[in-house]
Image (cartoon, rainbow, N blue to C red; front, side):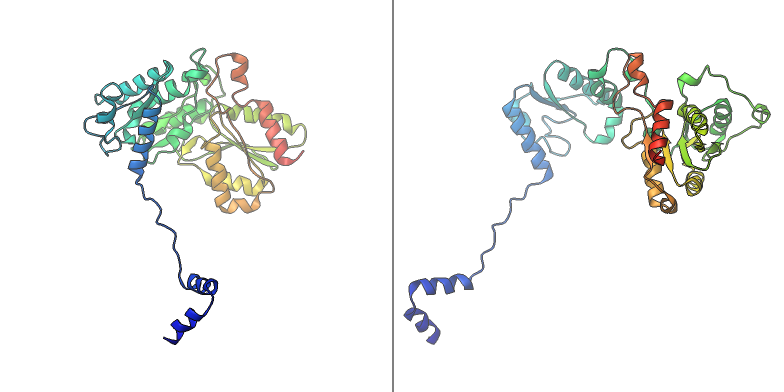
Length: 341
């Protein structure tokens, strides 16, 4: 009672301040929305906003989607804009690509994205590359080393010269595991010296083992397939300037021979990787990451540098193609940049 009477005798402003200090306000609870409902809401809003938007896929309409992501959309927009398709990912992905080319805004849903592999040709060779197409180069010229090298369960080899080609194809045939042999079509007609041991019927090149094509002390240059030859040309040019490059022919993408690469980096203290594929998530990126994570990182005197293909689908014009894949001059520039000369 004494406390209450004391409050009554005080001015109203003071009492109000005391009351405010004694009560703690909490922020209202944030709205909780599932990812399913957020996707549904986003599609619904865009379907309502633009009549060119439509949804197609397996069981997206009457069944409301396998995971109920499209719940209610068929009832709201009807058969014309919410379309159930046959179980044919390649087919309805192609319909979506064609519709987009004609000015519509398709949403192409795969029941589970694992099934998108059935439609990957439409996604990559049609959807991704059509803007760049003036011939067939974009669809016929690409490096798959990083693609297949990403997948556990596969072995992936990438020969450069005739010795590599014979030794690796024989090892691939004898291996009990699935082996992807990445042959570069531009190399089929190129002659190489064929050493006596390679002429033997028993000649094999072990999968998972790289080869040092040229010894060097100043910088390690790692490559596979056709660019190995460019690296050796660059090394010959730089040797005349007093720079000795150690050139490593990877031969195998998966499993990758990091022991050979690490030992070379420990010796030279510098690293450049060269590949014909795109830069993002590429073979060179994997090598650089492993060097950074391993003991050889402490021996680097400069950041590792990647030389890759340009981050565009392959152009058709010869001059543009030459500027889209690594050339000898690009490798020399990268080596000099790394060595700061």
